[in-house]
Image (cartoon, rainbow, N blue to C red; front, side, top):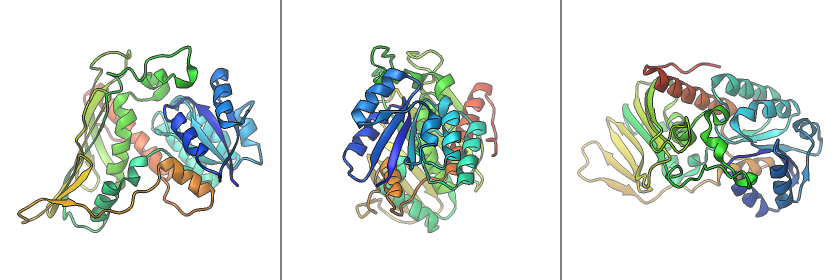
Length: 337
């Protein structure tokens, strides 16, 4: 039975991951570590695990096969590098890095160690996105001229990231602090659809963006944004994301000379060249398990699709360029590894 540990417990998805583990009988949690002692103790109690003295103690523990990293983003590198050196398989919550520099250093260390890697890009498991990628790979769109992704919710309006100093295990305020998170609302949610667009369409050549704090509930933190990008294949793309939306009906559009695909209200709509009507696709591939479940499955010996570390680093590099472009009102080229 694979044995895992947690190194960092700050991310808003941590409770969900703990719940997933609790429903499985094929994974054992041995220890947890967090720089916040109260948070570590409370999560250790939930997981029936011990509190580790340090990240290095986890890295050097021969009984531990894999580690879940759910820390603040600016702590990722200091946690990931010793764990990679210790040959621990890694789930690192998105985004991988604050920007290109730390993300590529981590990705290179992960690849050099030859370990399994996964991050939280769960949208790849959605049947509608799987089908659209199949159509892209099969060349059904002809020349793809335009693409759009959107991922929004009302977290800022709902105060999801308000500080909770008396409840540290549920205090997500750091996610609205760009120094710790690297991004605000646009990067937090936008990275999911950025991943989908790059997964389907490949590398991005240049970007620009505009960001807005809207409610100004979180000092210095953007709450919504839009980006424009040019893919190396020539496609023009746009990306929308924010914490101030009550509805996000159209999450993906891919337009080509032979086919247009729209994911609207969770349904896939296709319009082929010359066709009179729009087809609402009912027959779709099976959904994949959540990205975190796939990591646990991989530790248990199953052959499952995982996100590569270099892919995760590429997304951090593009998002860094989008934030830089928004600040300078220019077009930016993402930094390379």
